[in-house]
Image (cartoon, rainbow, N blue to C red; front, side):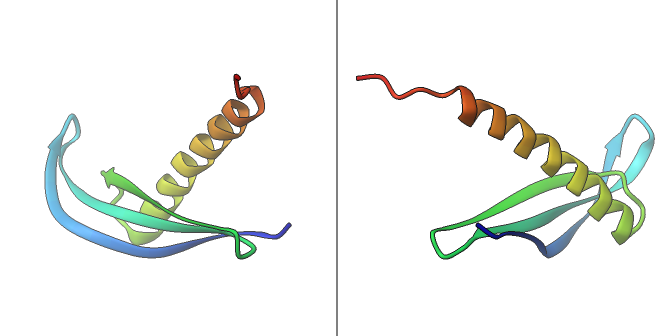
Length: 81
């Protein structure tokens, strides 16, 4: 089955305070589509990346970690009677 992951939106929320000082804050949303049976949107809050491209890269790395963990959890899940 074909799976597509697409960044669908980036929202800037201004500035926030962090250990590095005042940094940009925002939200990046990815759409995950697997044929016509499953459509999921995942929003990832971010703070720190100064450019749009760096924000996308940071969010993609977070998404990859999440999907890897979710895949392992699904493999180990068993339905009990």
